[in-house]
Length: 251
Ligand code: SAH
Image 1: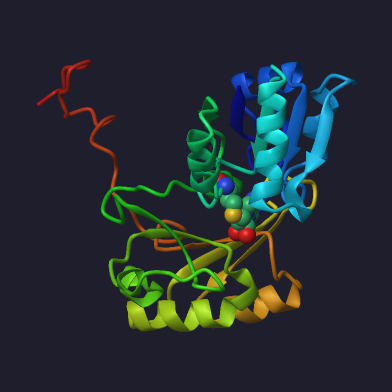
Image 2 (image 1 turned 180 degrees about the vertical axis):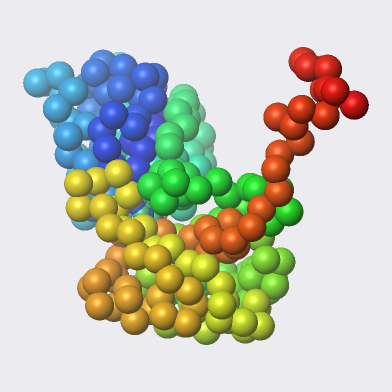
């Protein structure tokens, strides 16, 4: 059996109990070495075979995984954050399916929620935004035209932008076009939950320079929206006058 496991954003305590116990039982672990903390491997058995997928192709990863499965071994494919977001797991799952190999997917704490926690904010606040957009700038991987940053920014929803800090100037230009303003709060969170974590706060006006000055060009989330700074409404759920299934309000 192959298990796709979300390792969480970095801090080894931010893996699920299920993910940790699969790591403890694993005979083979294939981990995304560029982003996953090696501390997770300390929980593996001594006999566990370890492969860093950073230098491997899809075919090579699948060969190791399928060989392990055929030998009756337990295989963990360890991905950073949550495997269902920019994890490139779909192609692996389809490969396994074609080879009639069973697999499971164990979710993880994604770096976008870890980054929002790091800045101590909530993405969805009343009167500001009830929507979170997870996206990226196109790089070598294209992004459909209908999902261009300018178009998405025009919704003024809370945003978490992955894989894009290396081109922060272009991100800022597109967001400014969509918002029609540069007075928009932005927080860049580098290596959320790692000991090297850095938080850079600003607006579309000054964030690019600040990020350059901090020499951040990878491994960061760009969080954008008025959920970071500004007024918001009180939630109805905990309002004394509001009645719901579990509580009678005063009016
Ligand atoms: N599946 C992962 C994302 C993989 S794509 C997840 O759910 O988080 C890799 C990108 O994720 C990086 O370029 C960066 O934008 C973001 N990222 C991953 N870990 C991060 C962390 N600890 N702090 C900030 N951003 C992170």
